[in-house]
Length: 102
Picture (cartoon, rainbow, N blue to C red):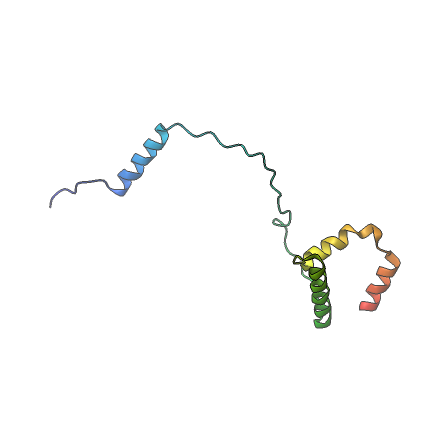
């Protein structure tokens, strides 16, 4: 049996490693553009149990809001908006609406 000539995969990998070590490392680029992190990526979703009628009403409301804004409004965005305007909501009317919904 004759001896194989040429490079084996292991030899090529070790050669690439030594070549990479010999080359000067490139300086990392500095970006000045601020990136906006999505803060909901690390949290678990909150389940919402709604009846079929409530789901239909929610979807109608979301479609109306999307039509007014020209952008897609999701139920999560709607809930975030309601949380943001918490100070302007009349608590007595909200509590009454919650009792009537059940």
